[in-house]
Amino acid sequence: MPRLFTALEIPDDVAEALSRYQCGLRGARWIERGDLHITLRFLGDVDDEVAEAFHAGLVEARPRPPLDVTLSGLDAFGGDKPRAIVASVTVGADLLDLQEEHERIARAAGAEPERRKFTPHVTLARLAKRDTQAPDVAEYFAERGLFPALRFTATRVALFSARESRGGGPYVVEAAYPLG
Image 1 (cartoon, rainbow, N blue to C red):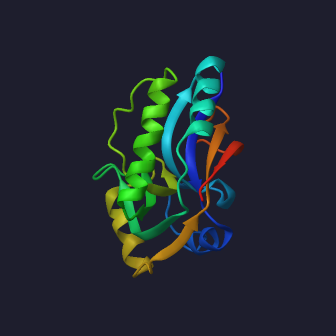
Image 2: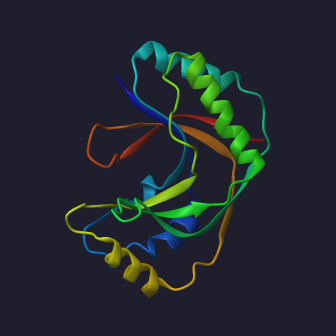
């Protein structure tokens, strides 16, 4: 059973800029630069039939122009019990429309509906519950200062597979669907 998700890949220059934020936080498991991405639709472990139907739906998806993406700041998921450090993504109509299309394709392929609200982001680190507390994260943010917006143009969507592990990666591009 493959563990699949679709995502926008992060270009090397943007990944390099993000890597400068990947230090100085106790209990952080930093994501490898080559595994940074913006998830559009996580399917999880699916059988081959669902995987093939999802791929076929992505191949048949309507043509789209390249997508301008802006990473706008650093954030943490989990509030008082932080679980991840992320780079926030500015939500635009084109990005939402693309994600909604992937949701429709996933459901048509037989995947369960996504129950979480779409919050586009790039995960920079996963945090160990026992090692990283909210004050640690607040100090990390204070030490980083301002986050200059990072912009790029996505020219394709990738279908990734992930090995079964804590924290995902390494990820493998199984297929790519051009934008433009």
